[in-house]
Every structure is written in structure tokens, then in C-alpha cells.
Length: 375
Image 1 (cartoon, rainbow, N blue to C red):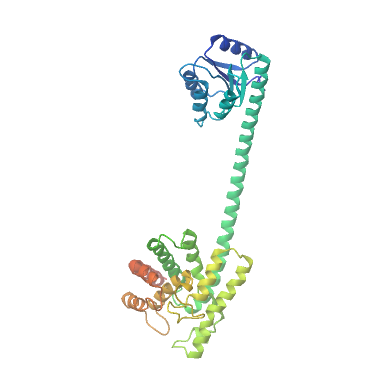
Image 2 (tube, rainbow, N blue to C red):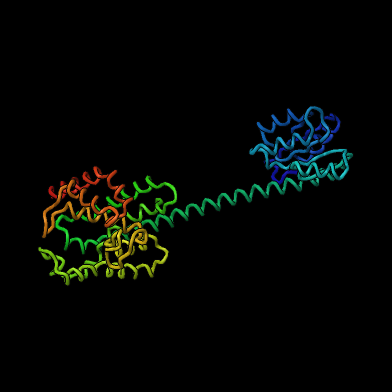
């Protein structure tokens, strides 16, 4: 009997012997089950597709399509694969039963059968089936709750990240405001870094450390490249002429100071790739490909890729910008200086990427100048 009289289970019976079919139909019908009965497997398969039963009683020896074939067809259909199948057969050898279980049956009743046994096994497997359905519903509901919680956590983390990022970027402006009359240096250089990084990924699609996270991280981390300049005195930072050798040595310390400041943050967030990259860029964006840069005289690939990208972006923006000690250079002149620095100052691959993107560099610089003038 179905657990709920208002929602009786549907049992499909498939047997090519009309007497067996009628007997089972009458007996199970009296127990309150809904019955669909078929004399061959092909008709049963069509009916199951239209209205899947809760359980199937299946004979093995049938013409055209035997019970094993019917079972295999049912199990290959994703919509029908979970329906429990009990085999009914006069075949009593162990190998016959093993074959039935191998093709997907859940039970095996040998003919001639006792109805009490058939009913007990039908009831047991229907209860198991109902428990499986309930568990699936519970799991789906649980997954939905988990999905909602994950979305809430991610939204909270995203909001926290944006708040932290806004604070960090505001902090980085402390250095820029003192050193850059236009106030657009950070915005330009991080755009330069992003498009350079994306171009490098296109140039070297295989065996590269550049992925989507790298692109996102360098866009934000590059904003912190000169954060150490907050420790440089105005006398040196704002000097209108060239620095003396002693003053330049002091200026060079902004790389170490910036990296040290960011490492303090990294201690609190040791797995944060964004802060790790910010440390790399702050410390190494004045290193040169030939090893003549500072503060560590790193050479070639030993310079972090993020810092190599930042080096070109920073130099291009400095060349094309007006400073207290110089006029702005044209794009063409700046381009030639960068080309001259290929394989000495700059990573050759980064220079190649710049050459592909030079028109975009020119446009970013021009639009930034237009915005500055409008202010």
C-alpha cells in the first residue's frame, strides 16, 4: 500500500503471459497501487517515457525484446534510470540472477511466486525509492541554502575588498599629490599596465603566469608603486632641478620603504596575491633588464614580471608628462627612448607589447590630458 492514499504509487508490470499479468494487476490493485500493465517491452518503454512509474515488475523471457534489454534501455535514459526494477522469472540459476543485477535490477523474484513475497518486496523498494526522493529534495534544498550563503559571503567579501581597495588607493594618492601636478599618473599607469599585461598574454598564450587574476591584480597593485615616496622629504621630492648623487640615493629608498610598508599588510593577509604583487612592484619597478637598476640590481627574468611591466608604464608616463625639471616629451620621442632601452632598461617582450599598443598609449595619455585641462 502506498504511504499516502491520496497519492498512490504507480507500478508498471511487464510480462508476456496474460495470466501472470492479470493476476499481479488484480492483487496489487487491491493493495491500493495504480497499475499499468504491458505484454511486451517496446510498449512498456514508450509508456514509461510518457509517464514514468515508481517501480517496475519485469519478466525476462519475452519475445522481440527480453527483460534484460528493456532494463538496459531504461537505465540508459537519464529520466528513467532511477526507477527500481524487480525481475520476475522462472529462471533460477545464479548466473541468471547475476545477469539481472548487472543490467540494473534491484531485486529478483523466482516464478512461481507467492503474492505475499511480491507485495513485501514491492513495498520495501517503494519505501527506499521514497526515501531516495526525499533525500534528493533535502539535498537540493540544502544546496540552495549553501548557494545563497556563498553568494552572501562573496558579496560581503567583495564589498570589504572594495572598501579596502578604496582606502589603499586613497593612501597611494598621498605620494602622487605631492609629486604629480596632473593628479592622473596613477590612473594612466594602471591602464598602461593592464593593456600591456593583456597583450603579453596574447603574445605568449602557453607557459605564462598571466591569468585573469594577474590582470586584475596588476591593475590595482600598480597604483601602489610609489607609495614609499610619502617618506621622502619635500626638499628632495619637489626639487625643480636635477638631484645630487646624495639626494638621488635618498630618493631610491622609496622602493624599499614602500615594499616594507606593504609587507606589514601582507603579514595580516599572507595569501593575498594582490598585496604580494604590490610588494613586488613597489620594490622592483626601478630594476633594469641588464641589472643596472635599483635597489637590488636584479637582472632579466629574476625581476618580477609585474615590476617589468610597471617599469615601462611608469617611464612612458614620466617621459610624456611635464615635470618641474622638464617639459613633456612627445609620444614619438618617448617611443624612441623606450626602443633604445630594449634589452637594457626594459624586458624585450614588454617593449614588443608596447609597440603593438602604442596608439592606445597615446590615446590614454591624450584623454587624460584633456580631462586635466578641463578641470
